[in-house]
Length: 174
Image (cartoon, rainbow, N blue to C red; front, side):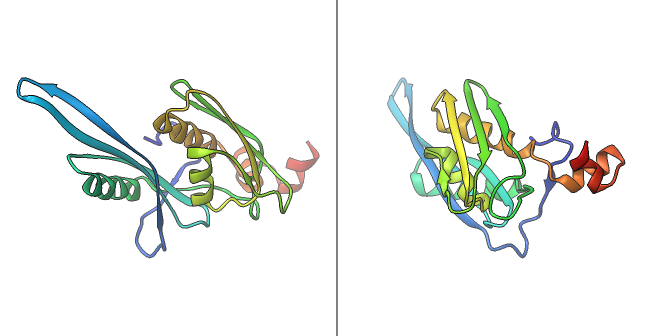
């Protein structure tokens, strides 16, 4: 899932204090010859609130096992996000399907100005001061993936300096 992001650092779940957050549960109906068959799909975000986050989808005939499957899937997709204190290193836009998300670093004390699925993801990452705008589709699956797209494109100053082959001071002077 994260192959297109060259700066994405995959993380193993061992030794991390992960907290899971439920983004949404949808009831899905399959109409068969014998009637309607109900199932559930759950999307969950797990994070250690210190820069490590993952998202997962679980499907099952009952809600509890759908959530459990989603948590297991999220733990398999953990990535490290570069943070600058309690905010983001720079502004970034992300998109997935019809959903577009814009996340902007904010001054200390601003709080998490975000709604729905974006708020859940940003809180799981450990961001405390951020502004965001979600546009287009409000489908929680696509909004979560658009937020991850934006977060995975973030790079800190050290990474930029290393990629360009210059010193940290030259990054800020250029």
